[in-house]
Image 1 (cartoon, helix red, strand yellow):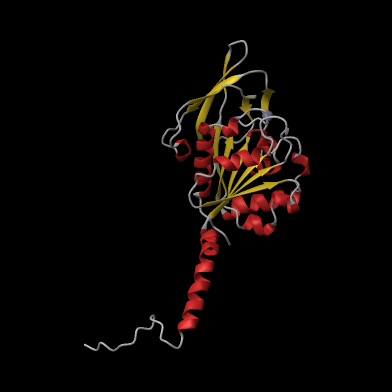
Image 2: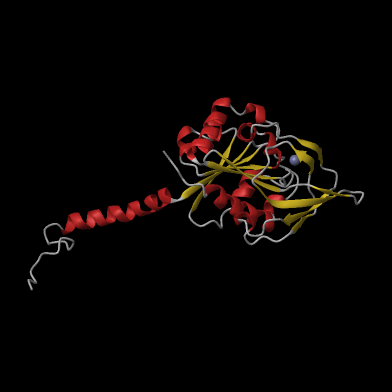
Length: 264
Ligand code: ZN
């Protein structure tokens, strides 16, 4: 057996400096490469949550904070007032899941951006999660193709029990039925296409004690992408700080991405 075969990996004396430089460069590059391989969720909000109430840093900051437990994800905050309304073509192209909170400024979102979002979902499999009053957000309505209205909206001291209807669904992982002591009541019916799954159901309790059912977590597949709608999330209630809600949203991000990170 020939024991003198040179090892191409071992540095010789003459090229040791080059080897060390290369090693150093690779080490410096490693975090960048790791970051690139992460999946990305962008948490977008229009910036209208009152600063003197529950979300002084806006809802997207609180939501992003709740997503921190997601391993292998880069979490990005974006907003309407950012350049390119927070979603440049480059950023959107590298986004696996887009989470959207809007309320008063839906009309300011540019149609060109809406079209790019819809294309990313339908043709390239980006996940889209609409929260609460984002039922009227342009991209959500474009994806649903319906009016997306609820029958009524009441922030009148209603509470709710959120009920896990599909315990085996990925969005219900680690989630048990839970209470929201305050919720804005969104009255059924909800003018959306029939969802492929209603993971979370709910029962509202009105101030007079009367009960009323209302769906809380609904799923669709639109083209190649997955879409989730979550009913709670009013800007003056603390839903996005609650552990149960945070668990649902972490699960939803992973579920919405599962259609595949099909970047072109
Ligand atoms: Zn609201």
